[in-house]
Length: 103
Image (tube, rainbow, N blue to C red):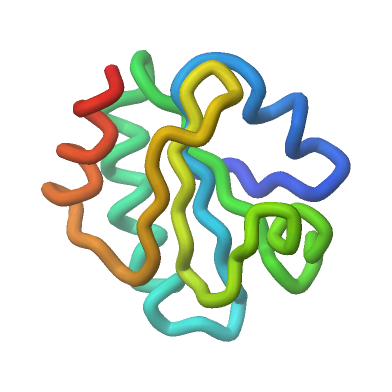
């Protein structure tokens, strides 16, 4: 299961290794459709990437600091540096390829 983080836990959860952060809203249909895709990727690549979700309504400070204006927005960080950013729903193969480019 993909872990949900908050403004408070964001730094600790995303500072090391390869981390895919999904900025989402509970009211957002594409965000809901993305969850099973992220869970499959997490299961397959658990040793290589950490996947977390952050609710933009519950944790607006982090969303604001990354300039998130629409959801879903996914940010890929490697060793605490943003290396990629994508917005909107993406299928499993596209997201897996995006992640594997940085493994």
